[in-house]
Image (cartoon, rainbow, N blue to C red; front, side, top):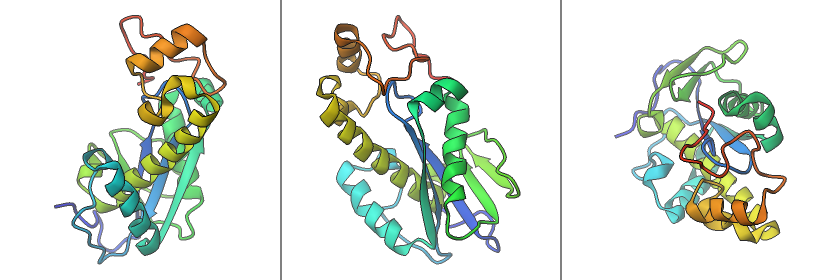
Length: 200
């Protein structure tokens, strides 16, 4: 059972990202403030849900959240910053857009660059522990999936409608055969060569 909050008396926003380990595309992050009495039996870490469940839950989250927002950092910015810092920037951009300013941030993971003026707590596997982080994981994942599906229409050879930019054999074979696109992250180890460069 996921927890509704860490601090009962604060306005908390859960934050999570999607697309950190991808070879192509932007990294997306979401920030979500849920009502204190929010309940949903299905809501969980987006990786534990089917695609259909994620999109159904996105509708619920957007309808019932006190505030929600999505932040994006481009492949060019990822190459400039590195993926870890880009992930934090995407979360900052999501928080920037919230209609209500949170008093505390719950961050999925073990590291974060402090957001100005708002304290935070990092929580390893937080998307499987707190409702607001799980909600953020679903928004980040579904909005990024929508984006990768659009890129697939432009560059169909890379199988992005299935792999969403992650390093699958088919994705890497297409890079080897056809080269890169403007959406590939050029600082990543695109062809594998026995190892992945994830920027951690």
